[in-house]
Every structure is written in structure tokens, then in C-alpha cells.
Length: 506
Image (cartoon, rainbow, N blue to C red):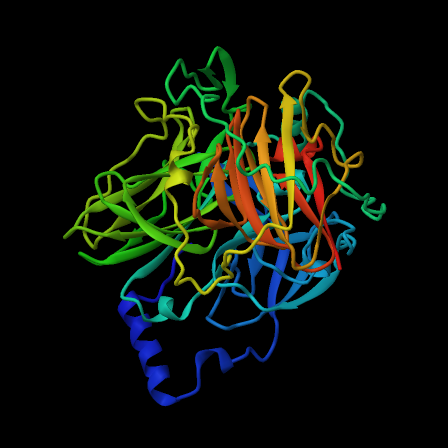
């Protein structure tokens, strides 16, 4: 995604608008809903044309960008030849607008238009089909909601939207990965929520997990690594390509930047089954937000993100040159990315295979442990208060047979995780499988408050990564009384049933 207006021109226009009126910007409501269309499109990957899906806005581009205070007023049209539904990942709309099949709204039929209207939460978000085979077919796009400071800061915004891609139909890819395991349909969601939910009411936040991890060393291959004598699986499928803004490094997007300028890079991992390391090379960066929510800035040149997670990086560029921003596939040599380049800079070809394999993503949770929520963020925060309810949530499964579970159950045979509106709830994810799981909760934001038995004042998120043989506890305040999805965002895991519901009652 690229903005044609120059940074200085954009700032000048914003200043001119501010000078002509004393009204706050949030008072400018759009006169008509924005249009968004789910449709097929053609991209080029490695010199070959590929038919994929996408979410096209009224100007013909992918995704949506909202101004500060602008409501999410969108008319979504299904121009596909099949039914679909779109989830606004990380946003908190009313439950009926959340975008999950039959919970409570049915999928959109071909040609159908559905309207959405809710107060948008600022930050870096995205939107995607909640049908796994469609999300794997690239039915996803950025959803950026700007803050007031985004209009006045002297920095250029760049979005890097990441995918894993196969020329084969997504249904074939899923069948190969899962070994033909049954799809646990997300339809038929009108079954009554069951009470209870496994160890509810017990406080497990202090359970010690020290000594379970053997660290990040050991023998690591493309598909796995040794961990305490057990084999961890990092990647269970080799995709044909890894994309940044629909492109590979054979033909990367080159974004013109100012000499010694500042860039806000919004990175979104929309991949179905791939975690990435974001490598800024020799250019220092500051991680300033995760999943759309501000953190205390953390300096570095390499930051990781699991499926569905987002990173906001501030980068201060040198005098001149071309500066590749690479996304390295976890535990492998494949990479993708884009290039920031000053005018006239030489842009050299970058191979899509690195010289060495990247390491596993945050296997010891060192990155997550270092994140701290920024209390200046306008997003909902968590003030200290007693915990009303705690749940231990066991994450399990194996590659053979390919089946992944929550509390030993798959979707359709699940026992809901329960809470009441307004309760402070702790959810402790205990991963006893040998794959990592990015766990996403709909309708809420949460704070990471404990990692392997150690309390932290962690980041505000909507998707938390739980590596093998670890425990991560999140805290949240239960919201609207409704049935909210809680699931792994690794699409083959979700496809085989790794989903439950967070059932909130009044």
C-alpha cells in the first residue's frame, strides 16, 4: 500500500484544514458509507498471473484508512461466486457485526450487500474472511484507523501487509496439511452455550512454569527444532511464495522516502500459517505499538510477529540510500519485504532466499516479556482490580493425526469459556503441544499479565502467541453479553477445530 501524496504535502493540507475551522476533526462525519467489495482479482507472483481474492475499496485499492474520529460506516458487497463474511480483526463492533458465520448473522450470499456502523478503535488493524479457505486465498486487507497525532506528526506512513501464498487452490493446500482431517464447520453456531468451562473460578496466575523451556538453542531445521529432547514443528507447509503488499522480492514495492525522514511502518501479518521476523537491516527502529495499541518504545532492528499480529515501527532514515525492510520466514531461509528509497538511490536486487535460516519466533517469549503497555494510549486500558474469574485453557494437538484442540475439544464439541459482563477475567493459555498458537479473542482487548509464572505489566493486545510448553495469562474486562470466538489464528489449526467461544452473560 502506498500513498501518492507526499508527506509534506499531506501535512500542509492538514494544517490548512485546521486553520480554517476550530471544530475538532472528529465532527466531520462522512456523508455516505464507504464501500468495500469482496471480489476476485489477479496479481503477479514470480512472473505468473494468479487469481486471488481481495477486499477492494471505492478507489479500487485494497483495504480502508479512516481518519481520527471517523466511524466505521461501511457497505460490504459480496461480488464473489460463493458466500462469505468479513471479520474486523481487533475492532470491537456490536456482536452482530463481528463477522463470524451464523454468530449471529449468516454469510453474505453472492451479490448481497450488508451495512456496518460502529465506533472505530484507532490503530493498525486488518479485516479478513472468517472462512479459513478464503482467508488463505488472500481475502484480507489492511484496516488503518488514524489517531490525531498521525495527521500532525512529521513522519510518512507505510503499510506492509504480509501473506503466504500457493498457486494451488487453498482447499488442496488445507487437505495436504491436515491429511484430510475433517473441517469442523463454523456454521450451526446457534447451539446453546454450556455452563462451566474447566477450572473456572480458580486463580492459576501464579502457577510456576519455570524450567519447562530449554531455551532457543538446539538443532533447528526448516520444519522443526529440538526442544528438551522433543521435536517442535515450526512450519508445516512450504508455500510457493511469501508476499509483502502482494509482491515478492523479485519485484518488490519501492517506496520513495525523504532523506533523513521518519517513517511509521505498520506491519500486518495476514499469513495463514507463517510467523515472520521483521528485519530493518542496519537502520535502527523503535517498536511503538503492537496489535494497534501503544507500548513503551523498544529499540532494535529485528522484531517478530505471529499470524494475525501487528507491529508499528518508527524508523529514522539516514541521509540517503535504499533501505530494505525484510520479513523473514520463521525457521527458514525464505523472505519477502519492501524497500524504502530516497530519490535517485540505487535499488539492488534482493534474493528471496537468505544465506541462513532465521531462528524460531519468540520461543522463549523474550520479546513478549519485554513489552510494556503505554498508559498514554487512548485505547482501553486495564486499571488494577481484583480478579473475578479465572480459566485455565489447555492447548493441545499433534501433527499425526493432524488435530488441534482447546481443552481437549474441537469446535462443535466444545465447552464454552464463561464470564459475566463487567467481570475482570484471567485466561491462562497452557500450550502442551509442539507447535505455537497465536490465540485471538473476538470482541475484546486484553493485557498480557503473566508469562510462565512471572507477573508483568505487558502489552495490550487482541492476539497473543503461546509457544510450545509455555503458559501465558491475559487479563480482560468481559464486554457485551454475547458469544465471542476464541481461537488459534493458524488457519489449518482453526480448520481442524481449534476454536471455542467466550460466552459472556449479562
